Length: 128
Image (cartoon, rainbow, N blue to C red; front, top):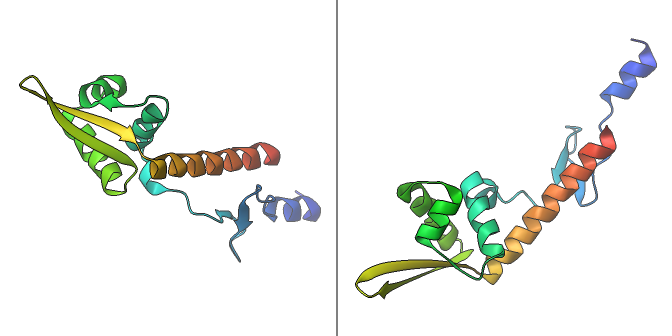
């Protein structure tokens, strides 16, 4: 490989819109950090499902995502603690019913996350 080709390969690709290079690393870094809370697969699935449904019950989410009671419960609680989802508990007859709704904060966080990921995808495609 010639000197020009080697030099060209060492240059960092131009950051995508909304991304800025980390000084000295040559790697792009988001100006707004990736939301690690939503980035986890089950939590992303929960907020995505709630974004297109007014509300979903615990059982509806469990079946939709194909997860266990415990797994869904832990991830839903993390989203609730971050105020991304509201959890409404009630009774239907004598049976407990847990219903989830995406909050405004959760919807805004999902929109930021999706915009960030779209920027990364554009950056990757531009570099190919």
